[in-house]
Image 1 (cartoon, helix red, strand yellow):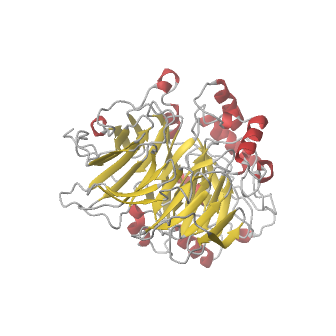
Image 2 (spheres, one colour):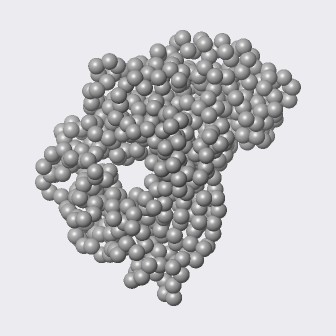
Image 3 (tube, one colour):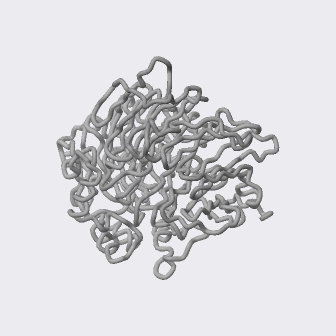
Length: 598
């Protein structure tokens, strides 16, 4: 079992060793020590009390073929370099631009990819005192400063991004819980803005700026309780996902200014969020040490991943490692129309790297495409985790070919009410009412094992919308679970409770995390964040399913790769980039991408 083997790697004394390579099904990822970026003196930065190190990339379409540029902040400093990636060693003696700020620190930054050229780039930089600066690090110009007098917001900037497809609009979130829409062409005025309510809903409101002449901010969003920690635009730019200190993910239709859906963390605040390449799934991470996968279409949690031992600081999808496999013909009961509908559902485009292959599929093919999403996470536990989101989790009501169900399994959730359930006619599972393929809410997956990195789970399958449980678990399911449990690694067979207790014995660098949750600590957190929603009331609902109600993913790899907490994870075509709070930006070459000239 490859997954079990990888999960078992690095036990005992090796746990504290920093890894310089790791292996997945694609091959070996290797740390390129010569490609490390940092401050020119390469001295570890004393990070206490400073804002997280962040990294931004842009390609300026340089004709030399080396158009990648990197920007990163360390303490009060901001650096802009040519990024040579896997090709050549980093030359830290020649930054294109370097800035040192007094009285405030950079907290985040974002390039405008639409306007970037070899002669000019537009870089937005947010600061700890609330200002936002627009600079051109190639021309070494500072063109504008927004919220200069802090009349709009006095709190720390938590996230800044250009609005997709726009050369002038950008969005800024603050620790106050507010977000503001700016236009670089407009001024911020000399007085505090006056606002007029545009729209409001459950725990959010949007105001326009009321003034005789157009001024910034164009819009003010107030979202949730406590800090708005991060936001991310959907790939098509139409939707906005926000995560807040109150533990909520809120997804908005950005143009219509309407709430699309929400999700609540298992515990504590949510710190990071990202979209799948096709915009169908959102992953969030935070103070519950979990990564949570949320379906945009169904507006519900479809999986959680547990591998980190402390807060998850960054989540990101790998657009370049979405695997497409030709699977065996599916066993299917139902009409030809139902079959074609499922093929269309299966064959929708997923990631940029696989769109052409997926789009060539005919919806009536008898051999559907199997798609696996890859995403990663890094945390305050200094660990990098990689995860695979596979079709058994995405489509729990679709039976898989038996030749492809080869790894450990946990409960699969039943489809939402009204969904078509396809039964495997040759399996041992029978539906008590013989209603065939059109009964909503029946779990027909008990004998079809997901081939994902899912943990076995001791609890029985629970189905919120089920009207008939005869097709659910049963004796056959229990036998299957126990058979799998004996065949996987010792770690994988631990129940969540057992693992909690074992983590409790260890002294991890963490504040509040799953292994240390007590009723007192959660009560304190609720008082601190002034959360109006009682967590006890959301637990067990669609907003926040119980742990046993959704599949629990196991990481493909979970490796300690730094001495200090990790703050960056970016997937590029030939490498992935991580950074830690000491100010070291590391490049990991993908399998087969190491250039021999190093």
